[in-house]
Amino acid sequence: NAGVTQTPKFQVLKTGQSMTLQCAQDMNHNSMYWYRQDPGMGLRLIYYSASEGTTDKGEVPNGYNVSRLNKREFSLRLESAAPSQTSVYFCASNKSGRQPEQPQHFGDGTRLSIL
Amino acid sequence: KNQVEQSPQSLIILEGKNCTLQCNYTVSPFSNLRWYKQDTGRGPVSLTIMTFSENTKSNGRYTATLDADTKQSSLHITASQLSDSASYICVVSADLLLGKLVFGTGTRLLVSP
Image (cartoon, rainbow over all chains, first blue to last red; front, side):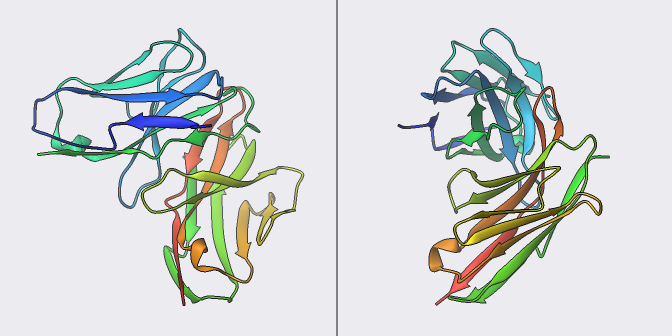
């Protein structure tokens, strides 16, 4: 099983450019999440999707949009990249966000630099 | 404010030695506490989960403890191996309905040969 797959692994953008980070899971999970990880800070939730067809804002949603394309795929879009969005982005999934005993499974991240 | 604090920030130990990592939290309502291991360049992987009624749980050489009264948890690693070099993140589930997680900043462990 591949688990959670994120693409690309690395990306460098110029300020103002747009891009979409892709995430796919093959575990038939209902809930999916996007986080960012910055030095000296814990992971912070950007957006989540409790189930196919629904999305909700997390702790730091400004500057981002998401799309739950189907049960497997959850993408994160930066419309106009800013240097403050330089970070490592992680996608995660679990069977259900309403079952906290279910661990979240993480991808290996996308390292994004905005110049 | 819901917070999770971990100590130490970093730690270096010799291969074969034991170590203990600490986690203090101020999260309410508490659902569970989980320890994740994050290897360099990889995503976090769950090691163990503790619920309110559990005091100790082991996963191989990893033993987690929870004191719900003092809101403290620890992760003890026995007979460390080079492969234990990683960041260890304490994560508390704060909202039963939506599975919202509060992440600590992690302890970076280096096991030296």
